Length: 263
Image (cartoon, rainbow, N blue to C red; front, side, top):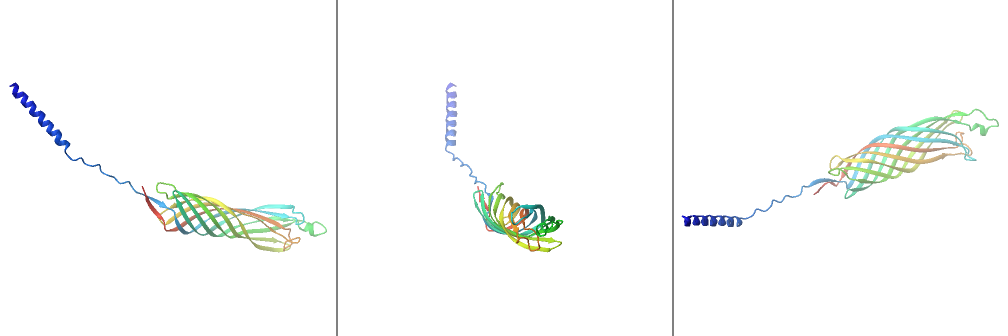
């Protein structure tokens, strides 16, 4: 009986060892490789053209001066407000998330303002000082344009948000009309050059359609209407200093670029 038990135990041990050895010889399944997920990220590089519409509000300071001394006799402020609209063209170049660009735009303007001031010029042209004359004036920003640089930073999960800053050269035509009830109308157009700066945010609606909201500030500096010693309609020389703020909503069509795959 004892011999039988020993033989049985030996047989079980041999079977167990053979099972382990057989399992060790089985092929091992390799791990499944999963490719990284590709995320489409927007590419801002490319040319674009578009249009915009917006609103502009400005501020003009009118100063009457004495030609001989340059002294200011009277000052008045004028507010210019109105609808604007136009078009733009530009190019963006993207490096990682930074986006560098150059843009030019041209705007038609309905921005206009008017006011009155007292002209004491008769006190300097007559032997006796008479009552000051009330002068009506109108200022209108006829049109303006810019050439600007832009720097932005692509944001969002797919990089299709672009907050940016912009600035550069501004130019335009300002029409000034001055009406003296005694000496008549003096109207002239002054071509202005100045600076503009601001910022905005753009959003890529599709690979080729971009919407944007933008604010810019303009400073066209001061210009003078002079004479010897009076203006053509008998007024004292005066200066006009103009600044404007503009907010626009625009839509661009981009050529080239579009989304690229990133891991």
